[in-house]
Image (cartoon, rainbow, N blue to C red; front, side, top):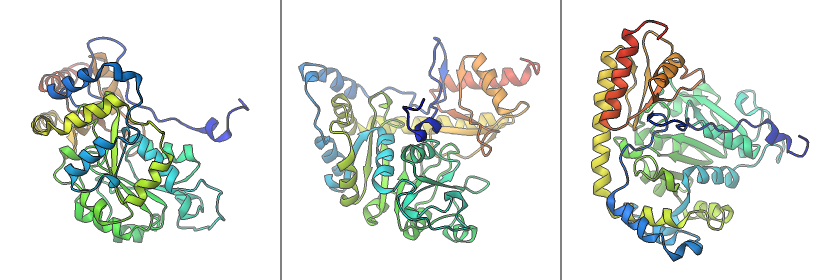
Length: 379
């Protein structure tokens, strides 16, 4: 349709995990926390469902930013809150990256991934990682530079990136998922620091799963003026429904993002829920331990069944299944009312991504896996 911009007509939208359309499905495909918000959070949200619903929420989520600043040992001006971290990632592309064609071309044969674009036009990320990153670049009309991770999904060293020649240390925006998704691989803060030191543009360390990891890189956002750490209340804090994410970084970067966000981008009930969450962290930390314990138990059980399970520092596992190809396992599990995630990209098409659910849900997954392996090829 000619009324639609050519750029939009060519876009391939981000594809979220399948949402259940029938009752009784076990949902292990979108990395949600299997446990509900704390009773304190539920009471706070219920108490806020009153006449204030007719009013706009605080436009800057001021109380939440102040509470987060106290929690992280920084200032409120170091923090911006968004409608999930996805909104903030989109704002980062808009704030720090020029669309392609806005500046004279600088051809570089080594930079095949950016088609000769200037660094100021480049969104850079490792692959495989969060599949939203290239979509955000495409929406903005920016150049993309996707650089492969190691064969074991490890993070290449700065020296390796220099030798490879494709990585651009001048890229306007570099996005690093840490721990990685979809592999679950954790990255050492010391290695991330070396990468951040070498980058000249903005670096976003996307720590959506950090509460399940061995370490975090928050100090880098408070140390380097070009580094931002992204956090969310979705994965670990059971607030996917409310869509609350935040960035921590230098006040000038945060102020730039604040200029282009929607006036009331964070709903009021979400702000209430996030504040109450921060007042009950003991409840959530106990859940983190439960999820990690279930993750390790499930990984061992799948390994005993012949799955190749990658080490994980997240609330999911990436596993190469035996006997059948991964896409066939996706369908066989779905036929048994269990939803898992499969990606068609070459690096991970042989794997399934399995969210860690409650113990009973993971037991059901293991029973289904045994049933598939014991059954005929057509089952």
